[in-house]
Length: 121
Image (tube, rainbow, N blue to C red):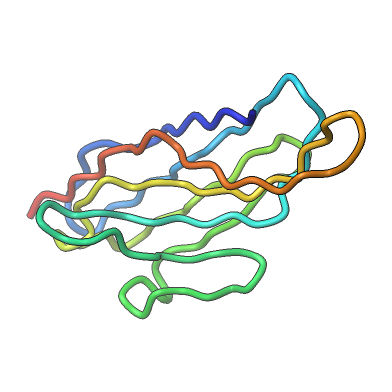
C-alpha cells in the first residue's frame, strides 16, 4: 500500500500563487509511473487538471498551472499562478505506482486526501 499526503492548500487572493505537494510513501518497494491532479468544486464533478507523463492539461488552467514530479523524493507537485475565484475547489493528487510484492511488480492507483484551495476576490 502506498500512502499519499497532500499539503499546500489554503486561502489566497485573486492573482496569487500556491504550490501543492503530494508525498508518497510505503513500507514496500515502489515506483511512481503516472501522476495527476484533479479538483472538485462544490456541486460539480471531479475535473482533470493535468497528468504526467502524457502532458494532458485542462484548457482552464493552461499557462497558469504546472504539474511536476520529484522522483527522488516521491513527491508530485502542482504549481498554481494567477489564481481565479473559479479555481476554488478541493484538489486531489492521483498516482499510479508499481509495487514489488516479493515476486512481481503490481500496478495500483492511489488518491490523496484532498486539500482545499480558496481564491477570494
